[in-house]
Image (cartoon, rainbow, N blue to C red):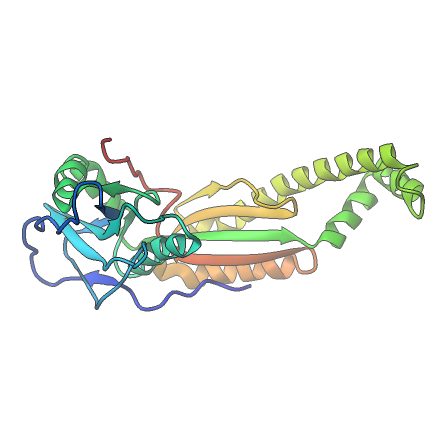
Length: 280
């Protein structure tokens, strides 16, 4: 079982009180540049060195402060292409790296406002109370994602052993002309698909029972592959990650040869954070 690793944090807590909201950033002209917003954190943070974000060329990460909040932003060229795989990775890396040190509320990928002043006045000021409450709730916590995929031959063997009709159809089509056994193959495929759906539900419940003591909340995600066994986001204390990893390691041993699982994180709490879009 592997876990995602993240390099050194891009933001950390300050020891002193921070100043008022930052001044507007320079724009290239109407419609040419905007202020890309990654997420929101407590105001008592500072950047650790130069960190670049989305765009081509990537913009340098800056902080926009208002009251008890700070937004992580960068200038982005609105005439350029935004949404490449590198942009998606940069967006996640900024947030997932920061969450190791401070609570972070992620905003949706592609959130762009006109200026730094707009970020302070139209986002941080408007959602000050809700964001502050959520950040307090996420203090010391991060999101982890458990992904498990069935070993195809193992789950197919289970279905054939457990479902008499599947076993009969399997024998019926074995070594036969695919065209002559088309209907039997379609029927067998439907039976196996339904069996995997039922197994996914049962295995997701089993996972939930294992991690219940090690997380604050969980969200079941939709499968991304037909052989997905479990796909669950967890909100857990960063300090207790070792306990979570051990519980999942034990489960992985129980599922060996049947389900291969991975633990990804820590990540920003994408599945748990309230992230209203800026007024349009």
